[in-house]
Amino acid sequence: MTNCLICNEQVAIQITWKSLLPGSGMNTCATCYETLMKINNPTCPICFRPQINLGICSDCHSWENDPTWKGILERNVSVYEYNGAMKDILSTFKFRGDAALAAVFEKDFKTSYKSNFKTIKFDATIPIPLSPERLYERGFNQAKLLADFLPLPQLNLLERTHHEKQSKKSRQERLSSTNVFTFTEASMIRGKNILLVDDIYTTGSTLRHAAKHLIDNGAHSVSSFTLIRS
Ligand SMILES: [Zn+2]
Ligand SMILES: [Zn+2]
Image 1 (cartoon, rainbow, N blue to C red):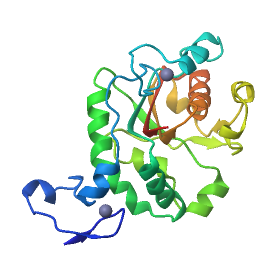
Image 2: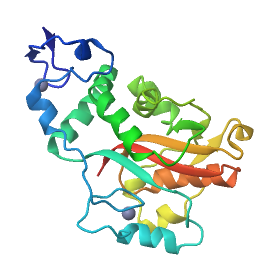
Image 3: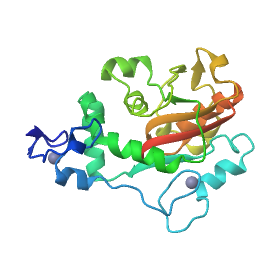
Image 4: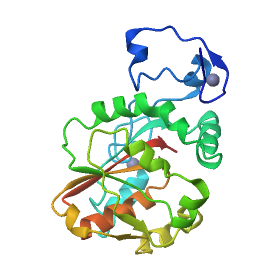
């Protein structure tokens, strides 16, 4: 017997060889697992927004029509849709400081990585950092926990220069604000294909600012992989 990581109910787990392997995903009850809505096609080819057609969504159109942002973020992939259940899980994950919850997502995160990024070979992941204040409050960076699941070298060299909430700014402010991120060792990313990792893609602004900073400092390409597409 073990306890569901989300609701804490006891789960009877049938022991199979597969369930004994790390990352087998047997860490939630069936009810909780079913509340996680995996994104199925069709999606926007750039940001992975669930939609009814296969074309580029209107948001991505605006980004791609702006010469500053065109092609900066090659592509985002997300694993789950944002729904009420996910909102509850995330607030537990982030604000109760429950780092163990990351294990709930491990199996789906790894499977999605393998199936969605077949055509590109990344040199490294870079987790989106928290501001030092936020990291101190929370005790862990959830983006780093997610990046730890991936079979790629991880570079923790981005730093946040400030942590204003991107979602509270207008689109124009988001587009124009600069230097949200800074670097410790820019030489490490020159010519590299980088995969940014974060928990959620909301407006795409944070990820694009990070991507732009990497491209401006010589990265060859930047894509992103996020747990949730809101
Ligand atoms: Zn449960
Ligand atoms: Zn899009």
